[in-house]
Structures are given as C-alpha cells and as structure tokens.
Image (cartoon, rainbow over the protein chains, first blue to last red):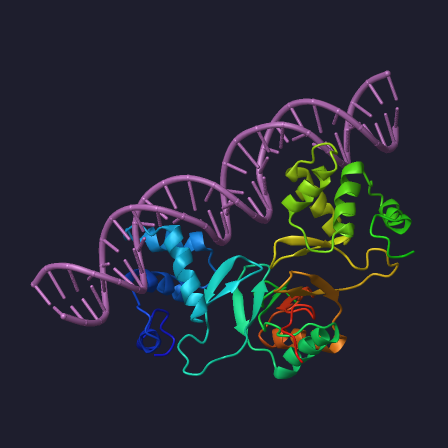
Length: 153
Length: 153
DNA sequence: TCAAAATTGATATACTATATCTTTTGATCG
DNA sequence: CGATCAAAAGATATAGTATATCAATTTTGA
C-alpha cells in the first residue's frame, strides 16, 4: 500500500540513508502532517500531537522539527498561508524539482501539482526580462476547488 | 511628471471618483508606501508615519487603512512577505487584472510585473486540470535581482 | 443644528515565529 | 561498561504580524 498516510518503511529508509534520526518527536510531527487532509499551522500540529493524551509537545519543538523536515523536503511550507503540508512525493523514489500549490479559498484544501515545464518556463522568462534569476520554483495559487465552486446546472 | 512618488492629482481623482475620502491618515499611509523603495510591514509604515514628529499613528489605523487601500487596488499585500507595496499602476488610467511580483531574496526589492496571457493561461490550465477554478492571478516569485546575482565575468 | 454614518483612537488579545539557555538522550570510543 | 561529546528536546522569554471591540471624534447631509 503506497497511500498509507503515516510514516512508512520508505520514509524511514530516507531518514536512514541521510543519517537523520527519526525520533519519536519527529515521527509524531510527520505522522500528523501526513494524515492531515489540510494544511496545518505549527500550533495546530502541536495540538494534534497532544490530542491523544500523549506527552506534551512544545511548539518550539514543532518549529524546530518543521525546519528539519522542510530542509529534507519531507514537507513544504505554504508561505501565503503560514501553514505546512507533507510533500505529496514523500514516498517516491525520485526527486522532484519545484512544487506548485493550489489553495482553495473555500475549504483551504491544498493540492500539490507540478506545472508543465512550459508554464514554469514562461514565468522564468518574464522574470529574466526584468533581470531576475535563480527563481525559486515554488508557486502558490489561490482559487476554488471543485467542491467549493458555485454549482453549475 | 508622472513619477513623483507621492499622492498625485490623478490618485486624488480616483478617490473622488469612487466616493472615498482621502483623509490625512490615508494620505500619510499612501505617501509612505509610494515613496518607499521597498515593501514595508504595517509596523514599518506606522513608524515612518511617526518619524517626522507627526502625530501618533496607531498600527491599528495602519491596518484599517491598508485594508481599504488594498480593496481599492491602490496597494498590494505581499502574502509571502507580510509586507505591503503601492501598486505600480496607481497613477494609470486603465485597470490591470492580476499582478505578479518578483521578490529578491538578496535585498528584498520587489518588482511588479505582468505575465504574458500565455504564461497566466498555462498556470490556469494546470489548475483546471485538477478541478480548480476562479484562480486569483496574484503570483509571488522569489529569486535574485540583477544587483544581487553573483557577478559573472 | 442635529442625527446618522464614517473615521479614528485606544486597548486588549490572538496568532506566528525566533532566541537562548538548560536538560536529556544517544552515539562513540577507550 | 562508563566517560565523553554531540544531537535533540525542554523550558522560557520575547519579537513580529494581525484582528476584535468599544469609545471618541469628525464628516455628511437632512
């Protein structure tokens, strides 16, 4: 099953491969993010970690762990929302370059997509035209997901 | 002179046309933003308003005024930076649809550009493909401006 | 002028994030 | 095994961004 929404063997393996310890705290944070169906704030995450009468998770620890998980590309930070999501390719073997996110203005659901190279290229080209380079390929686009669009008869 | 960096007759006219009062407080905030050469936080703006021994500008007022100026498209909020910039088309007669911003990771300078319809279309198409609609056309892209790029010989 | 609406003032508080120092845990090596 | 050193987590304080709410003032218009 590749869509079990918690830390899997393949994720554990990535930690091991990179010499990063998958501690209890880190596993808690990653499990919460992977089983969430929405982007979560750091404080949301802390709360959810503490929900099951587990030991107290300080938000400071959450932030520290989020930093690490982000560096290692297990999760993404949504900069327009100040929230965090697990990477939709967390269990994949391959690397993926940039990420684009669609954020629903209705229900706040987040969809991670990969734009076509042409679309990304068009943005890069416009940036180059005014002298910008080394563009980070993370884009966050807001709209309405299929469930939140006004019904069309 | 169309590039004087304070509230001009044409801006005043826009307020009048829309029946919005250009009060002293609103003018202060807009002047600060228009004469700034960088994006400013709400607290930056309050400080700058108070710099010239002018009367005390509460940050609450700044936020209220920013909301109004944003609704009226005189300014934009950079969601990835929690900062505000005046619209580069503030003195133009025509409307402009969406805005895209290039934000320099080095010096934090902000450039407002307009992507080609093709580029915007490519993003929209990718969104539609996964069921998203009514995409807001504001994009914020990070990179390095021409002054902050490592020198190339 | 007077009443209603719009604007501003003042204060409290929520939310997001970082700094810093201490304690605990885990790995390594003799 | 136990000493030692580094990594991780705990604890606390504080900075930075934003909203809620109610009171006072100003503006508008009947």
